[in-house]
Image 1 (spheres, one colour):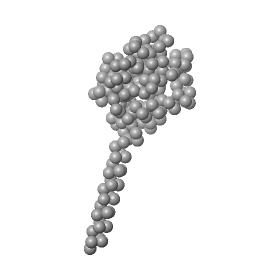
Image 2 (image 1 turned 90 degrees about the horizontal axis):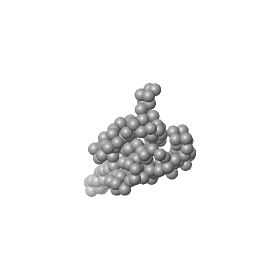
Image 3 (image 1 turned 180 degrees about the horizontal axis):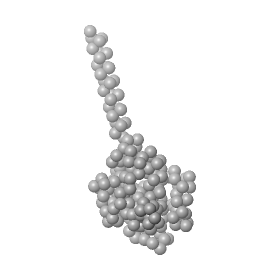
Image 4 (image 1 turned 60 degrees about the vertical axis):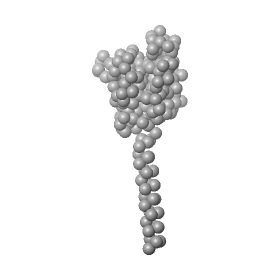
Length: 181
């Protein structure tokens, strides 16, 4: 009888261990922390020429960062949802979990980088006559909530898009020259 109960205990612990491992894998969401598993919700201020705006022709979002957001969502196997908001609420709404990240000409200002997670810059609009963010820095990055693992996934995918030339092509398409970093 002792042998049988020992097998049951070992079986119980193996089952418990396997269950814990499988649950922790499910909660990791393949290395990205989004509000929904299959949707990348991106905050944008859709009133920024060339970057993210509403097309006058078909009333749909267009621009460099709209296309970039679509490419990032595709790379992550997710559906893209763009959430239009005001410039003032772009980063604040990350705190309220309105969307997963911000791609909307947000610069690498000191305040932004202290309070939010962010990728390395992917554009540098310092030489552009138009304002490139909040005026402190023309380098543009993707922003997430502080400590969000989505930042790492975005970073990896942005790096791939840089390496394969896709970011350069997008920059040339919307700006007529390469502003990628």
